[in-house]
Length: 347
Image (cartoon, rainbow, N blue to C red; front, side, top):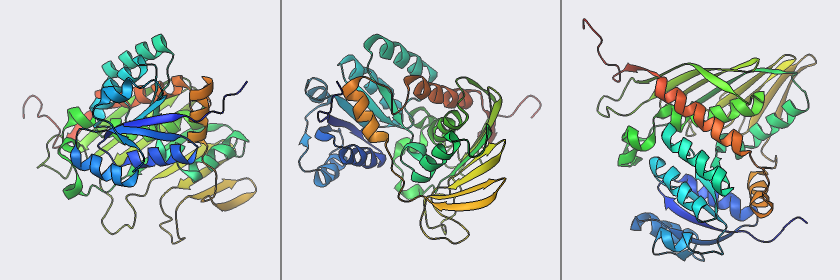
């Protein structure tokens, strides 16, 4: 029998504003926010004002020891997310991390081991797909064969840097993991999802600090070439979105198939259509446009069902870990350019 009981969830770690998106989608799907904890008083005060019915826990342990809480979600400092996830799973709870879910391959290996031992869910919120109506619609079209067999994805994730608003950890590579680990994780997730690849390799990757010498550990550009089973992918991410653009970035996805292609403009149509979630499809019959603002996003509902029923409908564990593995491999082997480059022999 399918379990439909309400899932009680809690929050540990409030260091990125994505936590509000994570909480809101879980609430909208019928979850119950039971408690939260963060060591920073200012972050906790702001969160408490937004969700006054949630208990303000005195420690993370208070939440982990509460047997009535089934799921923990977090947007802690990136390098702290995986260690927290291990504790969550060892306490018999499921875990939803903001992206990136890991900052090192060693963290990923340990998470795989503990997840296999406990059987708990370790999920990463790849919001560019899981919370984006146009990307959801693109997935529906691909699954119905609208563009034939997918042979390549091209994902670009430009962002505004907004330097004065960034916390200190944003500029420490050991804490944020690098640009490919961070922003690029979205594109790795989409590459696997749209191509259906169950394995893949990083053919080439590079990162750079082109414009921020005052922040020597910041990476402001990165790109990757991927190869899967009879498919390929290209990823480009950066912090060069100009101040005049009316959104945080102009993130786009192109899915190329044997019978056509789809382009998703997630944040805005730079050509002038208002709003977000624009989808364009070209096939043998012609070209058409869809506004996807009202497409349902089922991720949170599916995740709560998975928590109740021990299923894998929101995202398979294999997919979650493989997307993270690709980002970490790309970051680890990347050629360093710009202010990151190290002088070689003879220089």
